[in-house]
Length: 331
Image (cartoon, rainbow, N blue to C red; front, side):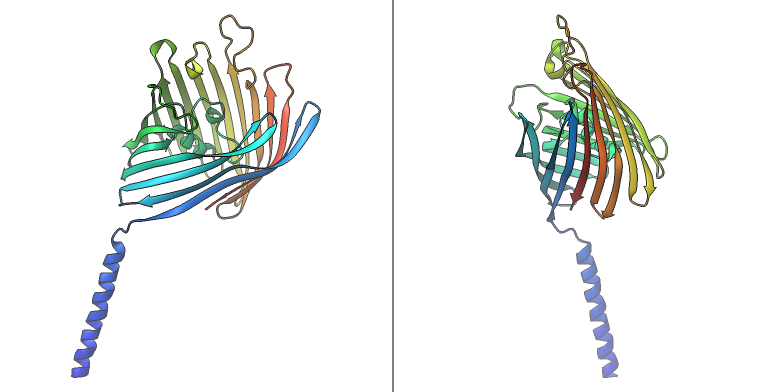
């Protein structure tokens, strides 16, 4: 009898300990993690009868995220990048993100050095950022990050809304000058695999106000991704008459498991200011073509042999063609 009682007591103690352990594991514990990303490539560029080859690390991120509670967290991200100045490739780094975030369900509130939702949304739709930035980004119409506050929430199940107020100068020009940018966007999913994204921002006084607008429609199904975007900016950098616009068409088709064929065509053009004879952005106006194959040999790694072409609008400039092998790795 004593043995049975002791066995029963031992069983109860074990069950109590297991239950207590399970309850403890369900409780939130503050903690953080590091994360990173880098893009590297080898490419050969042909232009005007000459060619040049180079290895590059075009971008490297190293960040840390810490959660104080289930709703409150913070993130710091350092960005190492390259700039070509007078034909020389120079490496530099800067703080890209440093913000605190509150998240409850679909509601997100961020404050500090924050990323811009428009760029993030277009990168997700395009999904080949390690080959090329979205056109609204590389054209200079929208900053990737800025100082300010932003919020994002689901108005209804199929409609997400994002609003931000920032300094409007971007992470490389954080000097306060009393000017603010108001940005607003929405993302609709009216049907399965269908995305419609709209965006608008404005900055400056009424006479020279800079205004940016974009509308995107895309289908992101398992057998095909295809879409188009129209984007425009009036009074670039609050200079009256410096207007420009563009269109982008993109697609991606799976060829096999973890292997995709992709292509994108962009066309950007700027206006001719009063009293001038050439468009104000003539050195960047023209057609851009991106095409290649991307495959993933392991989780979080993508490799892509690809072609990038630029046909300038300026008749006196030469076409530029680049053949490259790009790699993306993240952790």
